[in-house]
Amino acid sequence: MVSVSEIKKINDRKVILEESEYSKKQKSLNYSIKEGSYASVSNGAGEQYIVPYALALNANNAQIGYLSSFVGIIGASSQLIGSKLMYKYSRKKLLVIFVTLQASMWFVLMALGILFFKGILTSLIAVTLLILFYSIYAIFGALVGPSWFSLMGDLTNEKERGIYFSKRNKINGVVAMIVALVASFFLDYMKSLGWVILGFVTLFTIAAFGRFVSAWYFTKHYYPRTNFLKENYFSFSQFIKKAPGNNFGKFAIFIGLINLFTNFAGPFFAVYMLNELHFSYIWFTIVNISGTLFTIMFIPVWGRLGDKYGNRYLLKVTSFLIPLPPFLWLISGNPLFLIFVPQLVAGLGWSGFNLASSNFIYDAVTPERRGIVVSYYTMISGLAVFFGAIAGGLVAQYAHLSFMNIFLFIFLVSGIGRAIICLIFIPLIKEVKQIDSNLKRLSVFEYIYLFTPRPIFSMWRGVKSGLSEIMSMNEK
Image (cartoon, rainbow, N blue to C red; front, top):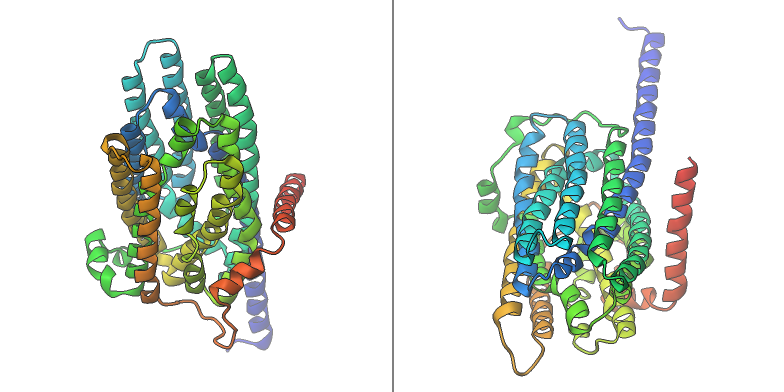
């Protein structure tokens, strides 16, 4: 017979353990923001400049398409391997090892530039090796995708997930934006000296540093115990067969098709700006990061609305917006127009769409199957990226149109494709999150009306908030 005092002691121990668990998770979530900030340094100094780097190596349009397509398909395929590795090795070991290897690849990419600059490598060989080694870089990043997604699902609270990821994305966005902007001034300066390739080499050194620090932060994370049982495993072919008949499968196909039409045009916005509009690296970067700026502006609101109304509703609202930017690029090539019209709409739409897509997976999939499901979901998107970018590259290289610029034609097709996919699939996807059915649902136009009255002040508050949170985290 257990006494009352013994029962009280057992309950007290449970409370202490729960408080300790909560404290570890909160500390790890703070580490995750710092880790993401250093990963954003790598993004801002490295990944955002891969296409300009390829162009500096004299890559043609088809090669730009291959660069994006091979990275997409190889990276996605690697997630299938990454999901299986979770059944053999700890998430901590996978994250630390492969993120470190990914950071090391920046040195290989730097070496290509140095050899090209010295005339040891021809343009064809340099670009071919760039595609190869950047694909390996993507493989290392993709191998940890399921582990990271699974870990973040265990660390975050379902009711506050939208708010947390909007905060994380906001801080990371500010870091990437600042790094990319500073990098653009540096690249333009190096270009004026005739040393633009060496400018890229310097930036990739910074990118490597950021990713190495990111890997170090994964050693400090708390990893809750999760049982990855073999009976929870199912094959990719089984997932595909069942996809058309279930809610998550329809969602995965929807996102895949959106990625197909997005990447049909995606790699060529940079080519259009640099080769057709002849933007400097500064204007190129300002136009690019303006999308990040508008994302920072709107993402906190999307996070709160997603937690309140559900992620399917956010997908519905933002699917009205994401087909619009390619159409708006057809109107003018003026950099100020591109910043305050297409990029504004893109920041508003994609910030909510991407947040809702990510959180929908957390809501729809059990913790034990998150890693394997997200790898299959990514595989579908990777196939879409591959075929989309390949098709866009071939059209850009070999199609000859007399009635309009080939890049504007690609943008037009991308916008039409996105719109058709959204119209077909959004009605087929159901909400999986428990939400209050009595809450008033705002229409698409009411959302846009609420977002647009004070954009400059909202944008400043978003950036200022991100900077202040970065400073407070560093002080801790």
